[in-house]
Length: 531
Image 1 (cartoon, rainbow, N blue to C red):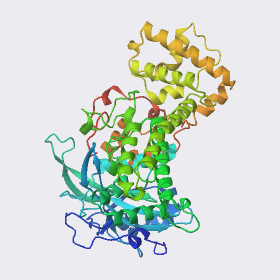
Image 2: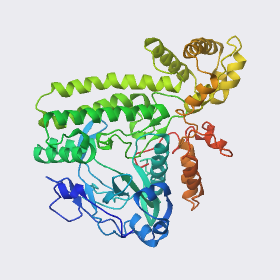
Image 3: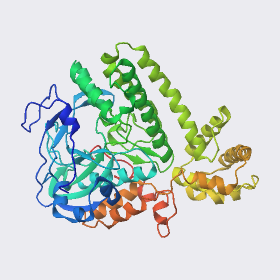
Image 4: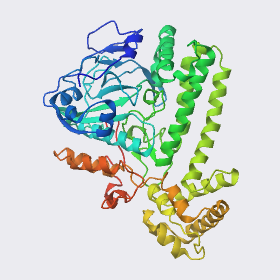
């Protein structure tokens, strides 16, 4: 490991916090603060993402060494590492929150790799920083398991995401009120080593802009373009309004791609604050996220959002545009006029809708989206899925098996095919069955226009519609076992989630719909921001 190469461009090119004390404070004119991770008392490595470790340059011997565990739990730094916490702000639930920053995350350094380029290693749950706002900077095991598993699940689903290299226990316990209801209890602490080419967020640019610090804002934007969007620069490497606008336009494009992916696989982020939005278009900060079991555009997993439902499943595209509007406000001083930014933001909704329609066409096995008639087909289907509790993941997998010669006059044929995806089959009354038969008639006619065989259509659909997702109850079961010292389910889920689109012999139980006992269970149906 001592041969790994670090090139810490972020701290080399941007201003540091002048103070070095690790106490909560307002940090001005700085992009980060140097901070040392908390020394853990009994570090224990639970698991590692082996393929990612190899790409980063860690050998099997490295992983099995005591030093690796010490580094992944904050007890040791490798040569070239310089640990620091980022300074940023953000809007939380639509309200400007001022300075936020890495309150429990500490960056170890930028690792130079031969296959992945520059990758920053970051410990989440590594202790207090100047941005901890009087918290302890620790992360509990349950939230760390959720982050570790979901990061890798998303990666294998083809969704842009930060990665998770390792999951470790620290030996400490901290007092947490899991649902903020006065029932606090001690929980084991853990650390996830997260990996990304950039941990900059929308809020990284909002904070200096809110303070009128145009110098730092310019430095941050230019650094981001040079390191994460270098293709936007011409050979002379000069920055201009044109470059800044192209940068913002690409951020919008990457963000819309990301949200379409979330809608495709049924992922609900749960806390789309601007400090939780990646500037490079990755899923970041796995807090109270959730996976759609029954299709419900109004569902949010976040208990803090239970009333307003700001971050509900069906509102994620609108919130992403609102967040981009806040980013546009932040970079306005570099542009000097509102019209070009407004044009890009106006195009965002149009571009998102087109991408969503293309995605829905693919989910339904169509060759390509063909306009208004297809849109009506999609919208009619959503109404049917909302009318009774229908498991979204299973529905699309079962629909791929729809025969070309389906007898539309026989309810029993299509019902026998799709019945496993319904949670309350007693709700499938005659009016619903008639409406669904009418939809199937239009859908089969549309498929006939494309002329694909059933086998080719099924193959295409099963490459975009996953069979295995990290359902909330499955993650909760792994958490409850781990809290008793049994990590076997974490390791099993690691393996299963590496192939989410393929049927896996012996793992059929991981592809079934939510059991009744999980419908209202904490950790399955709803989570808090401590999750």
